[in-house]
Image 1 (spheres, each protein chain N blue to C red):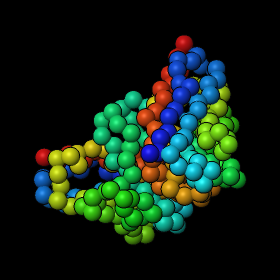
Image 2: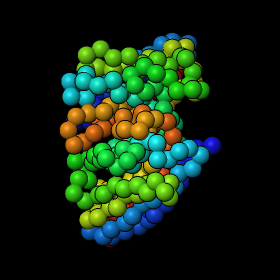
Image 3: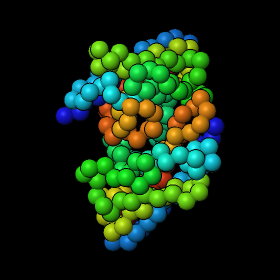
Image 4: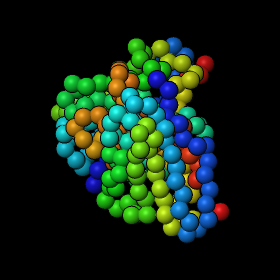
Length: 121
Length: 111
């Protein structure tokens, strides 16, 4: 059974940093691209970042470029999102999602339950 | 880059068919066959309904179908059921450093 379990969310002050993690199991993690997608309360889905199977292709939404860094550790079956210079508008539920392919397509067949990030003073 | 354009809401009666559109540009929807559709019920994670424009994942009802013409992709749901009432989002691969775009979402009401 495929499982994606996000962790690392919480309450953080504006300007501070947070690191999200996603633990993957039930599939060959190193064979697939992965994504972070967020959803603010009552709002739509927003793609945040994606990374190909070998980290050779990485992309970011314009809203987080230069502040967030995605990475993966295939040996640990884990995906990460380092979030720096956090802003109030980064407050959202952050989902980890598996792509159906080794490269980035956003045909994401499995999603975690999300981890909540709240940026507030 | 702008989000893909979806209607805010659509509605239909049980048994009817509805279509949700997703309009982009030649740099995203029109340029690649990597359009996906997601269903999201309140408080739940999104569920993949269609990928690569028209492919259905295993376990998704064949009442759901996808297509594309030019810069507009479409999701059609036939034989509407009450359980189809949800938010639907499209996504597409896009050229440039921002690799993925989502639509703003469409709320489907089954009357």
